[in-house]
Amino acid sequence: MIREVLRMGDARLLEKARPVEDFASPELRELLVDMRDTMHHLGGVGLAAPQIGVSLCVVIFGFEANARYPEEAPVPNTVLINPQLTPLSDEMAEGWEGCLSIPGMRGLVSRWRHLRYSGYDESGVFFEKEAADFHARVVQHECDHLEGMLYPMRMNDLSRFGFVDAMAGMPTPVE
Ligand code: NI
Image (cartoon, rainbow, N blue to C red; front, side, top):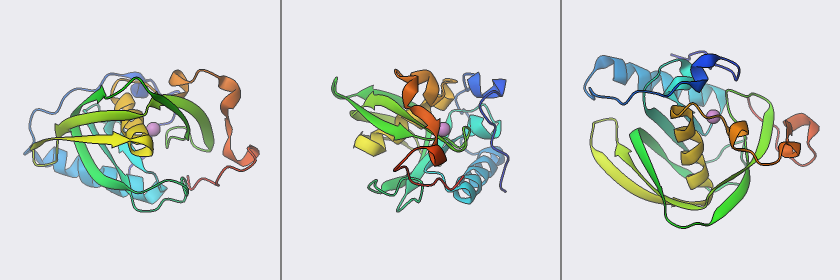
């Protein structure tokens, strides 16, 4: 079911999410279906459970091609539960981000360029993976939602924050 996405200003987006304990529950199955439906409906590349008002450590991300980020390489479709992120170098990279909770806007955000992420898939199986560049950026953005962090809170220069349709050269967002 397509769910309403909370927008920045809603205090629920600032809460720290709880870890998932029961991987076999029907509620988790339903949550994942709703997250996928909602993300695909809005054309997003990722979604975190708190964005639909569920305060659990669950994120999904991935795409083959995305109109909101037409220049970026594909990212595998992933369910990541109770994630842990570890940077693999000190190197940072700047890139433009948007968020389904902040529709119509983009901001330039500095993120770790390389990282390892680990956590559980939807069957409760532990896995870990290395990622770089946009893939690493998406993981960091989604996992920030679990800490109550939105990308403008990570920005160093708010002069690089604005409406997509007012920014020259930015792809038109789907949201
Ligand atoms: Ni977001």
